[in-house]
Length: 496
Image (cartoon, rainbow, N blue to C red):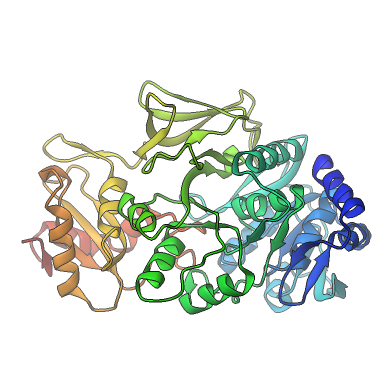
């Protein structure tokens, strides 16, 4: 992160009175940011430091201070369950935890009483732990970002500062980041996508990173959303750039259709983190929202492909950014080369430079990547028809009556689904929605029977990742008996 920190110092010298970072507390100017980083670097003296903090200036300053010190930084997702947090703390062998939620950490970390300090004007607690010597990291690791994983046990993705910086710089250049930009973080800074796109990129460009607390932008709990707060934040911060996951884009589109004021300041909305319905992108286009779909993974250091103004192919994930190369295996799996993934914490070093993403796709004649599903989730029906359930799930969730859906049918004569409706106990509308979605689909892709979910799929209940990606295996286990009953004819809902 040497180049990024040097850019911040340069902006401080040239434009000390320009706002660098803002939140509910107020604005931190470039002239003061460099000093704040230096002060925090003295305060945060851990070798492996975890950040369990709400979004805010204090999160940003702590993160940059650890980079300044060359310490290992481990952003801790607040949406993880206590069991996941406990695993992360031990797995990463943290010797320092910086938190604004001391009661939660105290119950998990143990050790001596924490030290209460002020970090950029915010009260935080420093928890010290005695390291055990476990959790070996590959040489050169600067940041460990945790993913929910497919089994629910978080995995630490080890990344170099150089790889993070390379992604940051190419992303800035791709989207035309400039001094007048105002980025608004609507996702947790503990997610790598927001950390890079919502914080590092605007600071490298000399722009303004607006990082209010998650409740201010409407996020509650692990995945709740108060749409009116999101629109209020858009109105008050007037951002020019924004990163959304599909669920938030759907809320933005739905709010505008319902009569909430369309945000006029935005010039670039990146959407990713999970599959995006083509119908949702089309709705956004009709509303003249500047939405551009992208693609990336933590293992590929966040963004690897992105649609851009003048190079936009709706429905695709965009073209690869200049710092990476995309190819396809014989099976159609997307391979990414040049991202800089070192390996998982505690595992073997990833040495060959090519990461098999597990995603299936194709490259068109113009170089745009089109994702078609997950290699492990694709299945064959009882009639030998191959199907990627993501395709059908995207079609289902494109209907306004369906918020989430998980499709199953491996080795079965028809497909079944677990559906989260937009309103509780809404089977009549869901029935009409499923029938409408089924109409243009080939018969082998249609959903014949379904059950209504008891609750939304969220990180809190283990049925989705922090980015909103469906954890289909977990949904299948949770609703196994009811799914089986669909194939025994004891179901409640059948497609007409």
